[in-house]
Image (cartoon, rainbow, N blue to C red; front, side, top):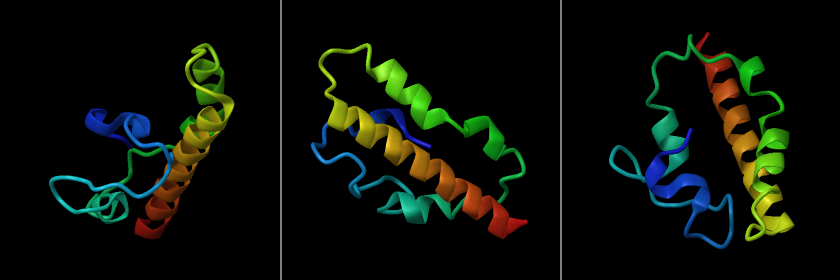
Length: 90
């Protein structure tokens, strides 16, 4: 769902905002559409991931609550986006 080079909007103040992607398309929305088979994706496996992310990030005093919440929400939305795409491809 994320590449390690720009993991969790590490260098962007506004978490969740569109960012340039490389090398296949300029946006995540376009890149994820290149996936031709999502048979492996289990939506149930990522349910509650946002809550888990919030708990983990809460352990770092340098990540404020607003950023923590934005990251968790954005990851949840990406999971939902992949789930929708998987449903479309069935």
